[in-house]
Amino acid sequence: MPREKGRSVIATNRKARHNYTVLDTYETGIVLRGTEVKALREGKASLVDAFATLENGEVWLHALHIAEYGQGSWTNHPVRRKRKLLLHRREIDQLIGKLQDGNLTLVPLQMYFSDGYAKVELALARGKQAHDKRRDIAERTAKREVEREMGRRVKGM
Image (cartoon, rainbow, N blue to C red):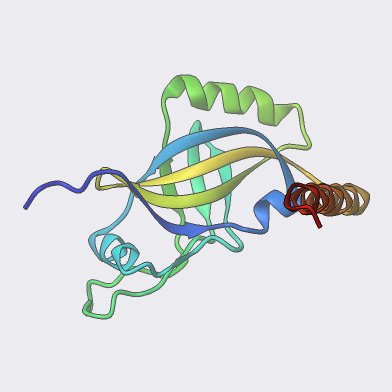
């Protein structure tokens, strides 16, 4: 059987870009058990409440929900366990320096298979306040209306 190529998305955290301003992103590997990989291949994952922390020089992903594998028995995994993320030492050291400044957090944006390996797109982000969210929504609405009007003019309406 040939190894799969390309990138297939498993789950996305759609609220992350609404609640946070993304400053930097990292592609990380993730340590999984056998039934977790099988459940991910079925697309049974949710990043809704997930977050990452730095503990003892390692990056850990908390509250990631991977549903139990239907064909598994006593070998099934705990649904919400702490999972280790794989980064280069240099990247972890950079994260430690940036997170010590305060007001920053690590949020998973997307989980996907890249050439057969499970990966997590991790974002270094700053939380948005309510007025920032309203401003972003207003800018998006204004941009959409400008594009709509330009389309009407091009069509001659």
